[in-house]
Length: 439
Figure 1 (cartoon, rainbow, N blue to C red):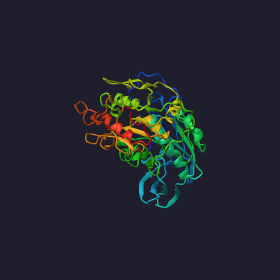
Figure 2: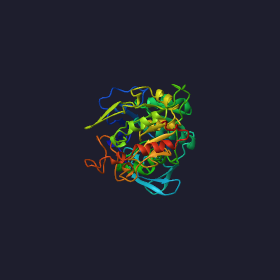
Figure 3: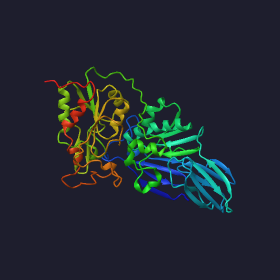
Figure 4: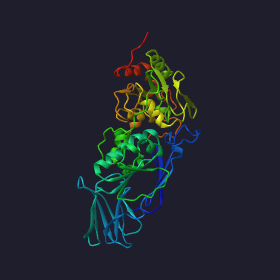
């Protein structure tokens, strides 16, 4: 049972503050960018300013008779006349198993603890244990909303494609609430989806509403499975009741080639040093080798320098500096013509993958399957690795350096200190058509 008391919880990218009865407040943050200027919607997500109040319908839309109303907005929600004497049963249609049961007297709004997609059968019994109303979930032809918080570039790119997959699988009328920057680059490629920008405080209506997120361990009933087991995409696919299969964002890839020389794009920055490649001078070593092979090497990070507590990190000096707050369409125009991309478990790697070019991913703190599939992943498994996938841990990018196993010791963030340039170059050499070394 729920009232309008606010509850606060956090997860990997944004922070949600949720009045359980009527609305969801979405707030975001990003470590390492506290002194950065405001980011415009043409550039990408600005998590510090990604705050939106999404209003859920004050009254459920499905009339079950007897003054009882139901919907599936953030779990199933039910209202009934005051002083009712009802027993409410929530059954999973796929298994026939009773998942939740409540006695409800009509005070406030009854909401289920499980907030993810479930094909519910709702049965309502009176005080004499007589079935007086029931409803089987069926969103075909009905209005459904999916909310994607504007927490980060990679999160948004990973999750947006499942909105379309949900629409096709359920044959519903879909609205997607997401960042304005994302709407600008994808809306025309998803004509069957109605898009609403995060930040406009929309009043949602309809049959069902779902929220894409990586929820913390104390919100276990808000997700069907731990994200550590299924990765960024798979966890949200599970949340929406879809197969956890890789799914790209549909981008328009028709920009002219920017220059005739072969070139490579790299991204060396991320939201926490745990994601960075921390081998001393590793980036410049690889860049020098790529230049010997005839490639121009462009570093396309948004920020040239980031500060994480006592640690200051800058982009490698031997790459061509294409950093800055540039429109994301410019990044797409470069990436689609790059010979390949080298990056980290962060947003620009997802963008490169969506641009359908080979992606070399350097990662120590995530395991295979955490991001999109790439045959050019580089991890040194002989040392500590994979803490992001440890279900006993939870990535907190608010801390200056996230190294839950070895912080403050000589082994701090060793997972990427032990990835050598030789390993990265070996991955590059596996890419079909890569230019050979020139003596």
